[in-house]
Length: 68
Image (cartoon, rainbow, N blue to C red; front, side, top):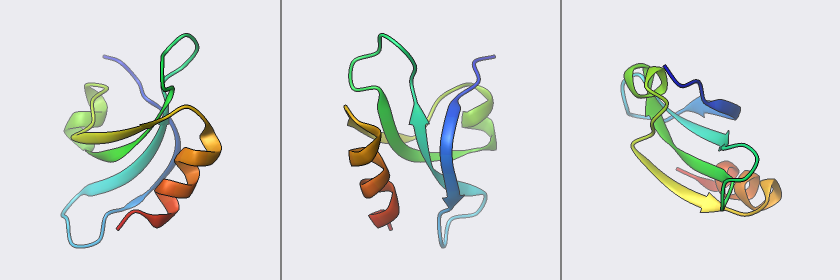
């Protein structure tokens, strides 16, 4: 089982047991930061349903805060 390095998380309004996350993919990964949605099953597998990729945590955090 792969664990995600989740930097921030919050519930996704109107979606049962689904939340927004900001993930650090770790050293050596191109476009290291991902903002996406996950649920309990996908996070256990180290996956997300969709994602937007960023080179810096600042860009990713801004997108995360604005995501609806």
